[in-house]
Length: 266
Image 1 (cartoon, rainbow, N blue to C red):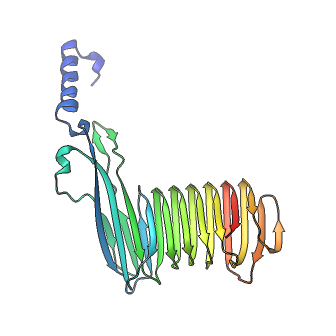
Image 2 (cartoon, rainbow, N blue to C red; image 1 turned 60 degrees about the vertical axis):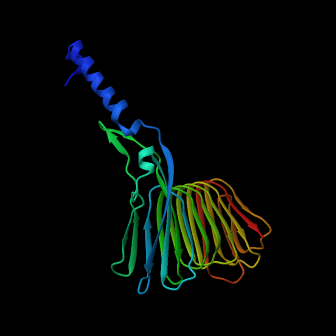
Image 3 (tube, rainbow, N blue to C red; image 1 turned 30 degrees about the horizontal axis):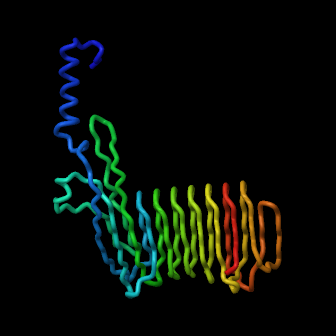
C-alpha cells in the first residue's frame, strides 16, 4: 500500500489508528519500573566431565563449590516492567539444562525484544549468573556482553567473550581466555597453564614471586612490560618476548592485537 496514493481522509484515519494503538492501549509506552528477580538451580555432577554455559547479556562469576558433585547455578535478572506486571507472579528467569551424556549444557533464555510493526524495542534486560562448581569438572563459558569474575578455583576454565572485562583471582587450574573487547586482570600464585588472547584490551597479571612457567608474550599494537622478574632463557623482541621463570614447564601464552601486556610482582 502506497500511503502517497491515499486521500486525506484515509491518511487521517490511518494516523489516528496508529496513534491509538501506540499511545492508548500499548503497554510498550507505559512507564516502566525495574524489577529484580533471583533463582537458584542445582545439578548433580556425578559422571560428568564438563559444564558448558552459554549466555547473551549479563555478568558471570565462576567460583568453587564446597559441596561435592553438586553444581549450583545462581541467577539474578533485572527486568523493566509496567506497574501491572510488577504484581504478576511470572517466571521470567528461564534456562535450559541438558544433562544427557557426560557434558552438562546450560543455555540462558534471553528475554526477547518486543516487536511492533516490525520495529524492535529493547528494555535492556540482562541476567547475571554465578556458577558454583565442584572440583574435577571442566568449565566452558561463552558470553556476548558482560564481565567475568573467576575466583578461587582449581578447575580448568575456558572463557569466550565478545564485550566485557575478565578478572582472575587465585585460579590454579588451566585457564584459556579469548576476548574481543575487554581487559584481562589477574592475581595469581600458580597455574597449570594460561592461554590469553585479546583483540582490543590490555592484559595485567600480578604474580607471586614463586610463580613459574615458560612465557610467550606477544602484541601487535602495544607494549610488553615486565617488572622485577628474573627471567632465564630470554628471547626478547619489541613485540615478542620469550622467557622462563622457575623450573616449571607450564606454558604461559599471552597475545594482544591492540593492547598492552603488563606483568608485576606481588
